[in-house]
Image 1 (cartoon, rainbow, N blue to C red):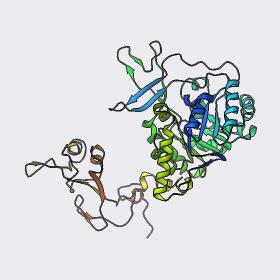
Image 2 (cartoon, rainbow, N blue to C red):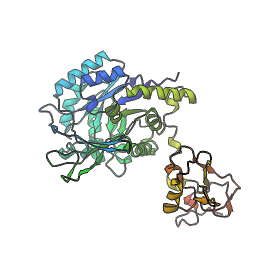
Image 3 (tube, helix red, strand yellow):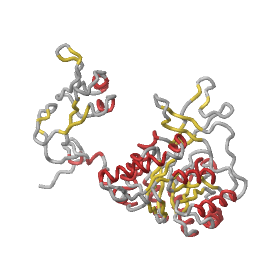
Image 4 (tube, rainbow, N blue to C red):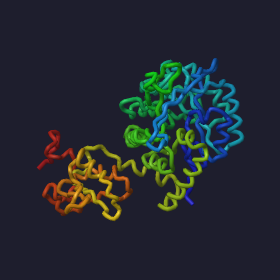
Length: 437
């Protein structure tokens, strides 16, 4: 059986599945239920400084995007950090950690960007014997308007400064949570790294408005006729999150920086993909809010079964395995040629491939052959774009088949070259470097 025990910056847990800082981790009741269901760890919902707790809205807090089958694809959340008293949270964290010593408990923190505020909260969190802290530099609404959350996360200099304060004033591992609401996520990651962070976690939620009520003309969710932008999460953000994880994992300036992957993780496969791109573990929120805490049992079983099937003994065998295969467009092999193939036995004659190709692509799929409805690839026109694969409703009915070196490409009339060539040396590139003779 594959060993999926996780050791993330010295924080140990029985598996790599943690609940992210969010409503599911706002109190002991939820966290205990999560641990009973099998979650390896939690990041406790973000705590603020001592004093009157923040005030959340007393109405709808979520907007949603659904697929055609009403499956939840994305949530827009306008909730703020915990509105429970700091001391109540701290007592619960201490008790839960005492009762569940084998599970990871990391405490998310957000206080004003003032050194004394951080110095004040760090020792009281440390006293709970939590395993680490996560600096919430990602919240895109409400708190950012008060100079916290993403307002800090969008300024690399602030990130480095606060991380340094924390590293100087606590023994606990420091995880820096990054905002995706930035042009180049590598810059805040580099700043956190320079400040001495033990790890980064990403992504936090994305600025969003998920819908507008066309009767009241107010954004959703609507509070007394008004709406606000919120944080977008769920399966729809997974591609954005994975790209940002990969950008940091392959950045030479942050080489070796541990990453906790977050963003739309719903299945074991999602988790494996994040880890293959460089994440040392994963954090989950929307999936638990949609399907309940027991979804982790499917994640655990699926990951273990896949690892056993592939011969991966531990998580170390998969973390970062895909990172070297992520490259810039300019380095892709321009001499690689693939063509679409349609399995006629599997084809249900729906015609979606033909319509997509005929109307929006390269007119490379027939609709009629010898007076009969028939869908077949015209190799002389096919550029290998694979649009047809993605619109076909039958899995594996259309596949992409690479042409071997030396085989004639009917579209270009030239044999496929066995030599790797990319845009940096292409004759059409005005910046191409000519090899010295």
